[in-house]
Image (tube, rainbow, N blue to C red; front, side, top):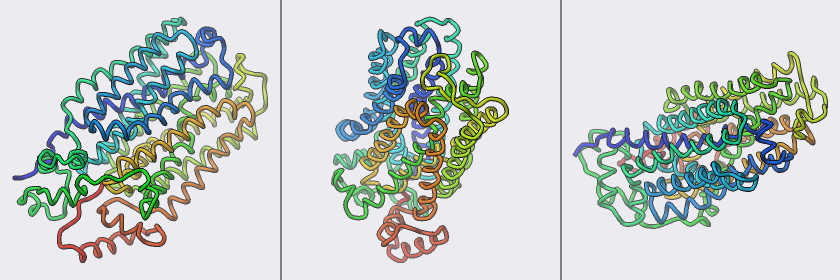
Length: 502
């Protein structure tokens, strides 16, 4: 029985792409309204702390969603979890559309954040368990493209509705966010269940059928694999049967090294400041003197750039080495963010709160201001080309299959925790230390990128056994040229090729 690598791939990639749109919708759904006079008047002009709570409610919900993910997916399975999260998003959208006060707004964003946080774990885990290895980079990049496209579309929907200058502007915008969740609810019924989850619950026949037809198991000797059907022994060797790893196990033995790498990479994604820039781009526009329609037009450019440059990993990610992309992206982003802060500090000056917004108390106009805006655009382009997709893929690949679900949940929980902290404190930091905020983010990003470049291993093209072998060493550093060495050592240990990790 020959495998069909296209078995369910179209349905899978289409469904995860719809889920990807949900990941991006809340990024820009507040951007336009946050500095609008009618919005602030309706919510009684929230100060920096309340602004941080409004924007930060979503990532706080994301943190909770990461924690709940393990409970939901272990009990229900991967495919049913898509349906539960779609329903949670719909509930949050209904609350947001019916908002009466600032606390109801925070609650709606928090509930939607739960769905987003769980999706941020579910999607890489599901792709790693169901999509063939040679297509996982593509699948991850398509999810990111859907995410960035959703950010752009929602921004322009809000931009157009903003012209009505009425409370129905944000109510309609947030109500429309239910549409992709309703579509996902329907599509999720056609999703394949993860063979890893099926095996962990003793359903070997179903797992065997999916593995045999989907091409999830990839080996070097293709003809030999196609000639032999997948057996229960293959499944036991691949997934370890129904044995389960606890969260405590992730911090013992060599698994803690795997976790340290995965968590550090996700911390790097947040420390670079991408979410701060995307959430508060309108604040930067006001700092450089832009107002009205010009401000919103300039604030829309990063969302365009985000979509266009996400096409680069779609075309190249499956051929690029993961660590190299993460290291280059992190170093570049760190230098740009620090440079933005230095220019702000050198050429800018303190001002009274702009338009009564106590968060915006720094101004940098003229050519230096437009240079800051250009650096923002370059920052988004580099992030979309590097960390946006590769960080997800690298964190997933570095974790063993039996630890991937819980491991990714903790990695993303660390990411969402830092995201919520930064999103909440940014208005306060911009008010208190102003341009130094950007210098601190840039410096931290450069340091973390150096750690990745010097000490972390490459994962592209390595089997799970080879990756585990790297982490058994006293230090986890591995040079790119060592790949062949580990491959040769693995071949001498076993005549049967090992499955490639995701």
